[in-house]
Length: 324
Image (cartoon, rainbow, N blue to C red; front, side):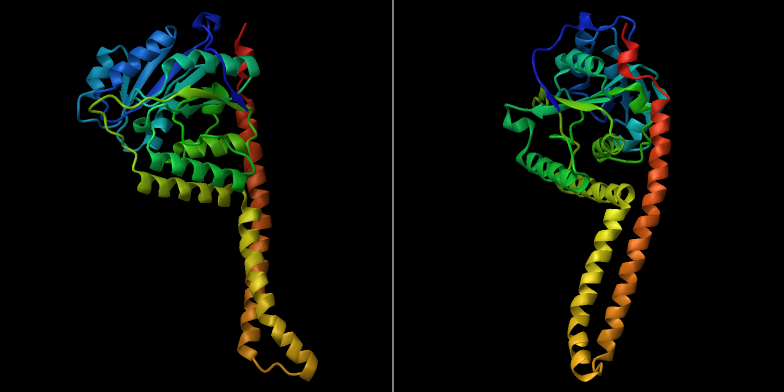
C-alpha cells in the first residue's frame, strides 16, 4: 500500500508517545548536523540518536554539538550499527534515516501518523527525486531489478526495498533478529516484514542530493552483489521447499531426459546398451528425491521458527494501542 498526501502537523501526534530518531553515521561531517537539526525541527518531542561507525572526520563531535545523543559502534558496517541501535534504544516509535541529509525529515510526522492511524509495523519512505545527482542511474536500475527479484521470489514486495528511511513500531524492532553486516540490512528488514505478514505501508518522500563535500559510501557493484546474495540466502532459509524443490525438479527433469532414449531402446530390444547413462540418470533422480525431502523437512523447521518469531512479535503492543 502506498500512502501519499499532505504532511500532517506534529501536534496531531500523541504527546506521551516516545519517539526515537536513529541515524547511522560514517564520515558525514558535511551533513550530519543538518540532518540532526532537520529531524529536531520536524519532531521536537523525539530523542535523536547518532550512532557513529568509526568516523575519522569529526562527525561524532559535530553531531553532539547539534544536539544529538551520540554513541559509537566499533564493528564496521551498517548492519552492525542497526543491530546496536535496535538493541540499545527504548522507544514506542522508531524512525531510521541516513545521516547524509538526503531524506526529507519533514515527512516524518506524517509517516508516524500513518503508522498510528492504520496500526502498521513499518512505513517505508519510497524515494522520489527531482535531481539526477541524488539518485544515480546505476542505483536506480539496481533497485528496480532487486525489487522485482524480491517480488518474484516472495510473491510481494515494496516499490523501494533499498530505502534507508523507515518508521518502525516497537514490536518490529524488538522482534527483528538483525543478521546483516552492511547495506543489505534494508533487504533483510523487508523480507522480515513480508515473511511475518506484518501490516506495512509506503509513503512517497522527497530525496535530495548530498551536500557538497559529502560522498556516498554505497558501491553499486559490490553492495549490489551483497544485496543479491542476501535475497537468495533469505529465499533459501525462508522458502526451503521452493528452493530445494526447484533444484530437485531440475535434476529430475534432467534424469528423465537422459533416461527417455534408454526406455525406448529397452522396450524395443529388451537391452540397456548405455549402462553409464542409466547409472547417471538413476543418480540424478536419487539426488532430486533427496532435495525434495530436504525441502519438506526444512519447511517444517522454518514453520516452527516462524511461529516463534511471530509469538515474540505479538508480545509487544500494537502501535495504535499507544495512542490515547
